[in-house]
Length: 191
Image 1 (cartoon, rainbow, N blue to C red):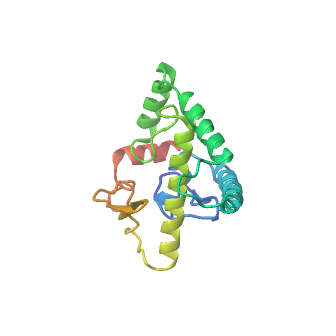
Image 2 (cartoon, rainbow, N blue to C red):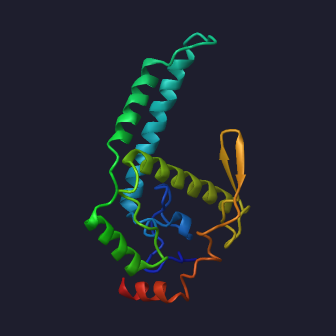
Image 3 (cartoon, one colour):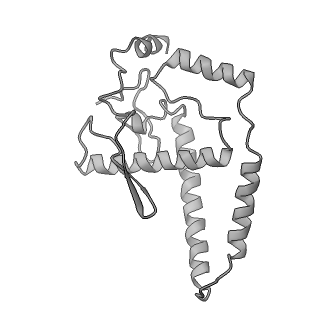
C-alpha cells in the first residue's frame, strides 16, 4: 500500500507515532509538514497531556463547592489564551497572499491549503492537535478492521455532549482525484 498524495514516499505519520502512513489523513506531506516536525509536535502534545493530568490531580484536591472560583492556574491559562488571541495576525499581507496563491497553483487540491496567518497561532495549534487526534483515531479504527480502505471518513464529530453527523468528506480516497486529476498529476511530476 502507498499513500495517494503525489510525491509522498509514505514515511512518517501526522501523529508522529507511526513510521509509515497509507492515507491522506495521516500524510505529513499533504499537511505541509515533515516527518520530523510531526514527531516533535507529538512529543510536545504528550508533555502537555502529562502537565494537564498533573494539574487536574492537583485541582481534585480542592473542596467541591457550588460557586467555586477558578483556580490560579485556570486564570493564568485564560489570560494567556486571551493574550495569544489578541496578538492574532490581522490577516495575510500581500507577500503571504502570493505565497498562498503560488502554493495552490503548484499543488492544486493535492495538498492542504496553507493555514498560517489566517487565525491566531493558538487557534491554529488547537486545529492541528484536533487533526492529529482524528488521524490517530482513524488509524486505530483501521488497525481494528472497522474502517476499510476508501471508507476512512469522519462520520460524527463530538462537541461535549453534542454529536454532529457529517455529510461531506473532502479527504476521502474516493473523492480525492490524486491519480487522474491533471492538477495533481502535473504537480506530481514537478516534485
